[in-house]
Length: 188
Ligand code: APR
Image 1 (cartoon, protein in one colour):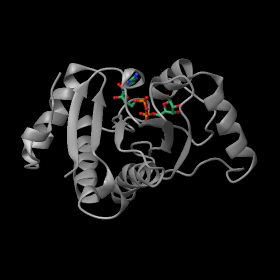
Image 2: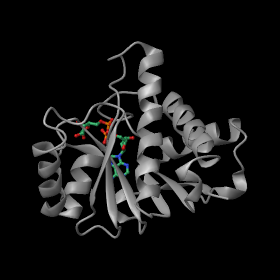
Image 3: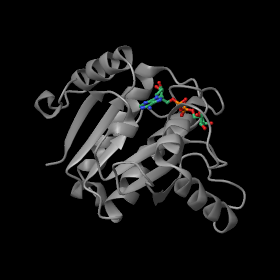
Image 4: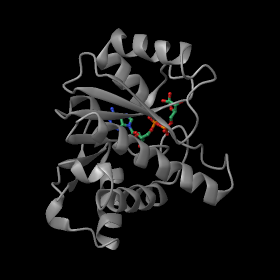
């Protein structure tokens, strides 16, 4: 049974197999999680992202999709870059589906790469402005559904890494409201 855990901290410090990056379509870095991952992971990550742009993703990575690269100097095997929807950039239902797709596709790629423990951020809740509670509901319900079937069922742990106490509390409240097994969450 795959564990869903919540921790408060810095995603670049997590000793996991895969780290999910809240990227933008350019795949060429940015602020927030993206900036932190490139800073901590080093230039190898960007070099692979550039190769992806020069080959399969000439127009950039579409919203809701994901790609896998090396993790460079991070304590992980892979980084999975995904592009979240900008809040208000789409009709609500479409945006919510795109956000769900970020988690679905990221877990699929990590599982297919043989990764077992995956750290995920609260995609779209920073620069992209998605309200934390709604993003938590979409993220947790999507991940729980994915772990019940398909390649993600092979994962040992999906670890939501929340950057501050408010985000952590919101995710914990939503987790409880969804009736996800609290035993599976490790706090702090
Ligand atoms: N570890 C974990 N979470 C973090 C970290 C970190 N080191 N840094 C920021 N966060 C949190 C933010 O507090 C927010 O809750 O990650 C969440 C996502 O915020 P952003 O990183 O701003 O990502 P997003 O809202 O998806 O916007 C993506 O921002 O950084 C640019 O290049 C990126 O253009 C893209 C856009």
